[in-house]
Length: 260
Ligand code: LHQ
Image (tube, rainbow, N blue to C red):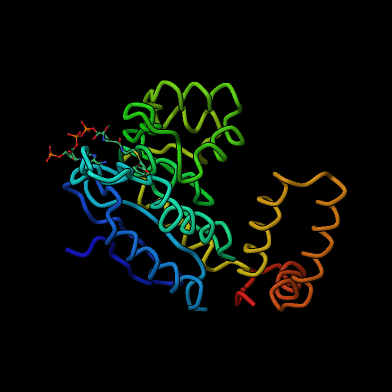
């Protein structure tokens, strides 16, 4: 079975994590498929938004723990898989100059929870939940969790989530600002698809630079951020979509952005 289903429709590249019998846990094959899918998202101009979700009842249960040798003869370097798989994935997601929408359809645990938080706009079904499961097996948060959590939810909530591994409901995740919205289960895919389609029809250059600006703010002082805004506004000003945006406003019609 393909560990990742990939399809392109209306500018939306859909990634469906597809190992439902393991709650879509990350295997090496899934990582390899995500690398390919990311390559396509980066290179194909027809892709103007990515939509990520999971097959079956779970979103993603983190690293696949099933086949792990717990008594290996040689010492194991757990950092190696981060270096070769998770870290490049998260960095490429953040650097992709196109929006990534995540529809969390069920439990998101360990690296699965933080993979969701690495996306740009996250919606979750009411029955979904987020678990920083690492501590339960004697690990530390990875896949960006120790970066995203304190920034999204504050240090205190991040610390308690990471130290207890307590399950956070989708509703609380939305209330705490970890995610954009919690919606009824039946509404998750229609809402996420609607949002992804709208973004795919949006001014792609502008969306990519919005992403750059918002993420850069975490490491910038106000002065540097204002300079960045000036640079980014210059860049979008070299494209076509802003002209269409203003023309459409003046002509009282909907803009037809080309993503250029
Ligand atoms: C799974 C998994 C799974 C395989 C459920 N693997 N099969 C790790 C290691 C090294 C270096 C770098 O980074 C990392 C990153 C990490 O992500 S560490 C954290 C790994 N994830 C976890 O610790 C979560 C483990 N899973 C759970 O705690 C539970 O399954 C949750 C809370 C996610 C869901 O619970 P339930 O809804 O009760 O489902 P379940 O436990 O019955 O799982 C359903 C099936 O999925 C079951 O298989 P089975 O054959 O018995 O039906 C599980 O074994 C399998 N599964 N997670 N990570």
